[in-house]
Picture 1 (cartoon, rainbow, N blue to C red):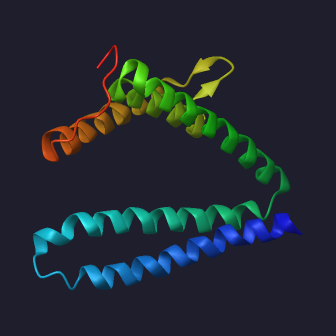
Picture 2: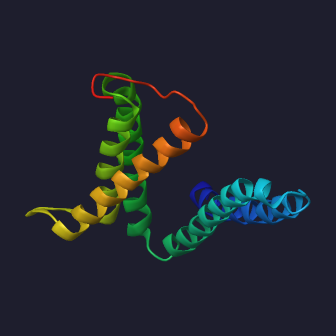
Length: 155
């Protein structure tokens, strides 16, 4: 019974986040300056997109009990990756650990690891994505907001 409640609660949370996103967009549109609306609208778009993915995956997992078990296993592995990422931030630096975390997590979630090795196309796409992500993070936080991020041995 509680598993059904949990599965449904994910969908409910997704729908609530979608409704909150609509409400926040209405509030953002009251900002007079168009330039001041860009970042809040971008953030709300990310939240709404995440909510849509949550609702879709929740409804898709209802169809297969094996998919729910696989999802739970993936969730635990990704949380373990987060713990390692947070430890590595202070050891090797934010940007290096972010690049590594993005590569490993992206490859794992996209199925880039196989018994024969790496899927070369997925590896290339992952490396490019991770590099662009780190560059965008640098430009946003270091160059844009002038915020210092944790440094380690490797930057």
